[in-house]
Amino acid sequence: MKMIKSECAMQKKTLWERIFHALGFEIIALLICAPVGAWVLNKPLFDIGALAMLLSSVAMIWNMIYNAIFDGLWPAGRVKRRLPLRMAHALGFEGGFIFIGLPLAAWMLNITLWQALAVEIGFFLFFLPYTLAYNWCYDILRGRIIRRRAMNACRMSAHSRLR
Image (cartoon, rainbow, N blue to C red; front, side, top):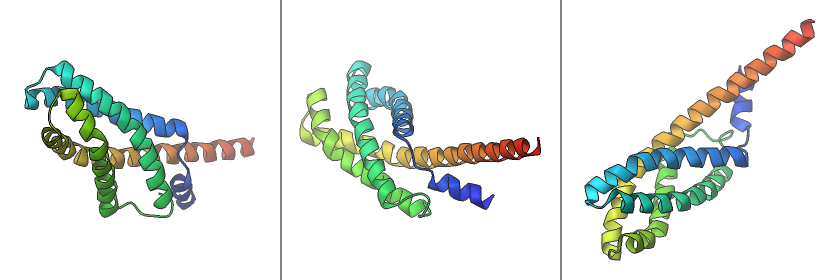
């Protein structure tokens, strides 16, 4: 079992897995943010939805770049990803994204940069815990899937040797 755990931790994410991770993150966030944002900001759902989709598209690219860098600096197989590291990950991602999203929010909603900053802070207050929770759950589920596949491969190998 120990070997399976270390294999799980050492398995690198493929480009397709990174795309799947980013799409899952953004789709769930979009389904939450668009209606809540429209209600809180008293703006049409279409306007907030369009902004959320634009920011979501940009965020997917930022997500893949940021997580590839993060995984390179703190590889899951060598570094235990406890709460402080996960909090630093979420803060770094969201903090960096504020600088990207600020001018886009101001332009899309036709508001000042100060007003856009308030909108971005609102998004930040949602996305900080969401990012932490999503990535933590993703890592747990990924680990379980990889362990199950490794155990099944071991069983298949043992079964074929018995024949």
